Length: 252
Image (cartoon, rainbow, N blue to C red; front, top):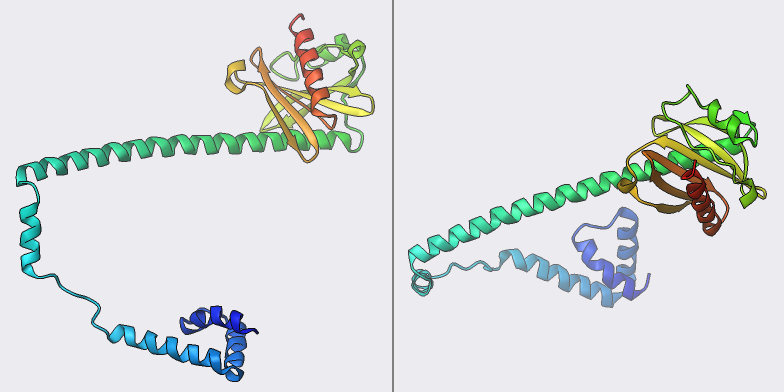
């Protein structure tokens, strides 16, 4: 241990803040270093002297009288106290409102992250084994009616093969405690899962693009439904897919 290191740890040693190992290292250094040992004695002497010193003083009574005479009269002081109290109450109310807003934001953020985690997990599961589709077909008129009676909404199914995104089928999945539909597309060798769930109006969430664990997730709302497009294609291509899907679905 160097003197510079010991100098930093001497105060912690005096205050009993070091663990046994570090305390032993400092003590070993002090045994062979007279300079650091002298510093320890000086610090210890000061530490012992401070409690014995009379460091607390009482102000004379005359000082209190002079201060009271310098203050405004009692009535203004009372008014000032009321103003301070009123300001405190208003400040407390404002702080409470801000805290509540922050709490809501934290809850919303946590819920969003949980939902996105579910979406990503569902996408990854679909790529494992042999459960990418329950109904495998490129015919949108076969996929759409297949969902009838399995969910309580009608997911839009559009064929984007001519636009570079091949429809390969659909399946049911489970996200955030809800049964959702997944319409599955392929872009070259990449799979796009488009999860559709009954959701809030379009103005509730807006459009969001997130990246998690190497996957891009585009989220939006339309027609009372919530959409999550997930894939490992780049964000620009996923945006292109979502735009083409929305434009085509709007005409169905």
